[in-house]
Structure formats: structure tokens, C-alpha cells
Length: 363
Figure 1 (tube, rainbow, N blue to C red):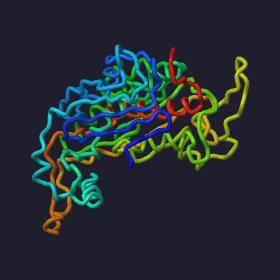
Figure 2: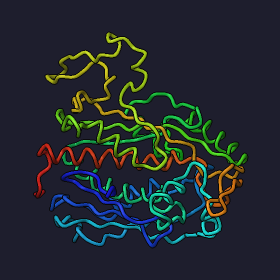
Figure 3: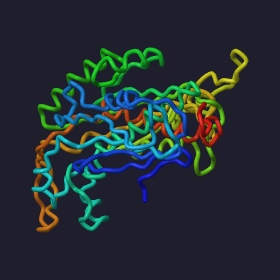
Figure 4: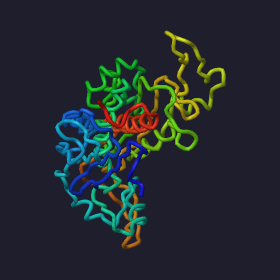
């Protein structure tokens, strides 16, 4: 019941971590959009494990296959089905510890909710592996948003307490893919990499913060009160496994500000109404203001660690300890950057269609 997102541009996620494949069905994409497999593959490649200490050793090819909805490089108006195959699978540790829930994972809650019938291998539906489908959907959404000159970009701003220095949009765009940590501050990225090496050697993991920015978003996107723009963005971003918090603009720091500090004064620049600051993060009353949409997500440390942790054996009903073996990311943040970008694009595309800004047939 909870595997679909969106009203007019609707995505439905399918697949499990160690099943045959993972993918997405996109319904409502206009006909006539020029899009090649290479456009989708380019986004998928951003999600692949990099050459850093942060990444898993599970090396999936993640080559997109288009099953329907795109013909001769153009969308047909039919549902688009995109998938990648799971090939580099090792389920042995999961079989051995089937009834010993891993701390920090959804093993226990999934077992209780689905009566033991859910696919537990690699975390099943609750694995970060399913986000490959999110990224494929985001690739299509980005192409549609490009018709409106809307640009979405995400980058790593913190790992393990090491913060990147603030950068302008153009500098982020230029630098974000120059290192495997997807950080636009090269000095901070180097420091983060050193910390990751240290933490990996200790059998532990790290979390961090990703910032997403959307430029050229028109005024008026959002459907208050229950389908406001920031609410739907937060919902989509919290669907990314490991995301535990979302903030817009000045975020939680507004709690310590005065109104005179937090309000964004209006002004006219080049015949356009703008705000002189952007503490609201480009959204007021659940509606886009025309300023850049700025959102940050908190990503928890990877739950799978090599250190021994207390847990329980559900079959034996006794307390045990578990040290995990397997191929896990020390820090999921760098790979989640592409996913944050994708989910922002999907939501913005849906709202742009609701506002009538994207036609049902593109000519």
C-alpha cells in the first residue's frame, strides 16, 4: 500500500535487495519527452560505490533496462518500467542470522509486521538497494524539469562532524563530482576521507548531512494544507533508508532566532520580486516562493558494523551478541547524494504537472 509516490507524476518502487531485480514504474510521464538510456545511466552511475573507504565492496553493474514506455528515444505516454538486475549477491550471512535482528535495521519490525514472510536477505525492501529505482525515476523527472530550466543539485556538507564550507551553486555544480565523497569543498573532503579510513579500521560507521538545492523553481508550487511542498518533499526524502531528519532553509536554528533575524525581507530586483535572505528555504505556507529551495537531510551512521552488539535470538528467546560480516558502506552519505537529488526532482516534477506547467504531450 505504501510503495507509490505522487499524484500526476507517480512512481511505484519494486524489488528487494537480494531478489532478482530492483526498479520503478513511472505513470503519468508525458508523451514526447526525448530521453535516452544514457540519460538514466548517468544518474545511476552517481549512486554506484566510489573508490573511497566509505563504499561497500558489493559491486553491482547497475545497467538500466527499459522494459516499457520509451521507444526510439522518446516517451510514449505509457507507464515507464525501468530496472537493474541484482547479480553480485551473497545471502549466506542473512540465512545464518535470519532470526537474530541486526541493531539499527528494520529486521525486527519487518518480521513482526509481515509475519516472517518478507524477504529478509540484505534487508529486503528496507535496503538502500531499492533507491536505485528512485534514481532512475529522478532521471526522467530531471529531463522534464529541464523543460522549465529547473535545476536540482545535492552535495555532501557533513560527515562524522566534519563540515564543508558554504559554497555558491556554481561552485557546487563544478566540484561535486570531483571526489568520491560528493563534497564540493576539497579540503573538507580530504579530512572526511581520513576519518572514514580510521573508522573503517575500527569496524564502525559514520553518518552525515546532505544538502539539496533546486534553482529556478517558479512561484506557486504546492497544494496546502495537507499536500504542501515542503511536507511532500520531506515525505519523499524520509523514504530514503537511513534518513532520520529533514530541515528547510535555516531549519532548526530558527528556534533560537528573533523574528527580525529570521524573516526574509522582500525586494524587487530586475523587475522580479525576491527575498533578500532565504531562511525559509524557498517555501512559505507550503508554496514555493521563487527563491532557491534549500533542504538538508540527516543520514544516520550505517547500521551494519563489524563491532559486537547486543541483540536477541527470536526463535530461542534469549539475548545474544552479533558482529556483522558482509559488504557494507562505512558511510552511506556519498551514495545517497544522488538519491536526495532524485527524490527532490520527482516531487518538483509532480507539483509542476499539477500546476499545469508541463503539458501531457511534449511537442
